Length: 363
Image (cartoon, rainbow, N blue to C red; front, top):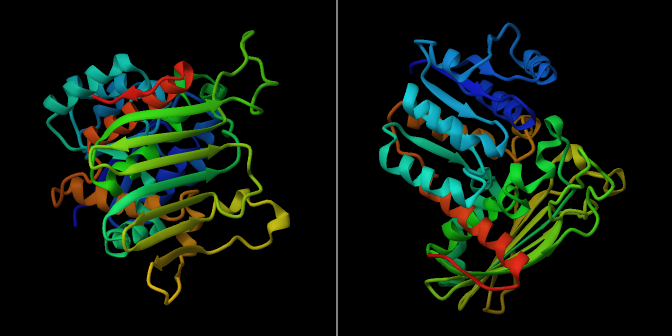
């Protein structure tokens, strides 16, 4: 297999998770990074001693042997960077979520869908968590057709980023774009239908209210409910709370149909577990058919090496395994630009519905 050469745009916390997982793959090398922050550069150097840093994307793209790019910059920069690559030297790209942060950027992404000549994979790691993948694999058989889908995430507040860029909607797109695009992507993937309307009730109750940046208090939401109606007639609900770090499981997903119910329970990152919980719980899938034989519990173990390589239950590694095959020309991206864009549309609709109190229709 050809040894693929990767270029990185950004190497903050999530960027370093991508680096650690690419290092676990055979026949890969990270040959250049664009990162303006000196502290982030120093942290990346610990993983990649001697790696070359560049000041601009143009300098990175000038590496003749470069095979692909990974974009892990702040959310609001993704679209502009994709456009620069498109007009300079298009290469296969894995771009972190969310793909965009505002309604104004949607048309620009639609243009890239039509014109970009190389594959682009939008990083939706939650699809590839082993416990979630098992849930998706068995959902139709267990339920006999999906009528209801519920996703609950109870977790810790937003982490610190460079200059705390994620404290404001204008940079992140808002909590239900930044954090919850993962869950809107899962809804479309599991239900296999498109959303038609969204209702949301959300707020900012506790997090970051004591922080001030240039005279401004952060405006990011920290909890809420979102209900989504789909063309198929199925309904989905998201419950988010970002001041519930004592929870035993970070994500709980439940799917119900005429034949029965299937649900999964996903532990949060081990390094964030409070000491009073003891050992982190094991991820589980529970199958509950309506027949009286009782539920079946499946424990889904994850390779400890993969758990140590990031905060997403091993999913980043499995995602990069597949992206490697995309770059080699052996498969198409499993998470397309359109998938990434639809997740952003749903997140923006949730933000708007919460602000206006109205149901927002998705065209």
